[in-house]
Length: 312
Ligand SMILES: [Zn+2]
Image (cartoon, rainbow, N blue to C red; front, side, top):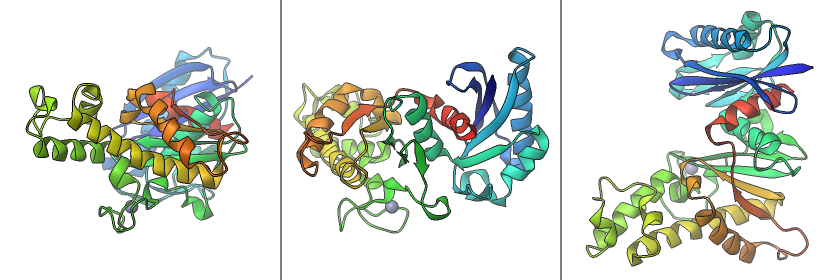
């Protein structure tokens, strides 16, 4: 039986798995990224991680191929990290360098796409051919899987769903546009809104446990049932999130849209009200081709699973 390596590169650590073609995990591990010493050094660390994981599998396990999810702008066709600011990499031929070290074929995509593929193949999207993952973290990322394949756009530069505008003259975004999905629906945006609403509402229950400095993306959800100000924050957040989800649903019409990242820890408290809001905005209604809104199921392992799926 063929087995596959999945590598998920983060700014501080690299996560790895070895799994079979069904996604059954045979070994798992982590190692420091080490990119401050350059891309070659980072690849050496990946090779050490693969060796360590392999040693924990049965000795006769054959590794057929490896996949890598990497942050930044990735040319997946040519196997090059075009630009990854957090890793300090520019035009680094990761696939060629890593293939020389680990002696098996390597494929690469960006980390958000890898996570989307992981959830699509082995997570909350495994029963569907068309799915979209939206990651609600520091920013808003995600990936699109159509007919079981990643949709990456020309030179893999597409599927930047966080930079879809949902408010024409809205908040300034790092990308240079205004009103991007990310500026309303990231955990960062949720936290900022919570602090603003607290400061405008000295009577809010949220002040009992938090200051405007210590409030997090979870705070407003915790007080939703008992505090008018917390409800205002969550309703505001869900309204924008539903707008972005409905846009994606109407363009791609996937069977399922999965929510990942820190905010998705809210589970059904988030997905149930969103489902209602999205259903109202779904083109043609929900009878013919409904779109489910669910939370993702693989957590921090989605990227490594997806990288392994890429290798398959
Ligand atoms: Zn933007």
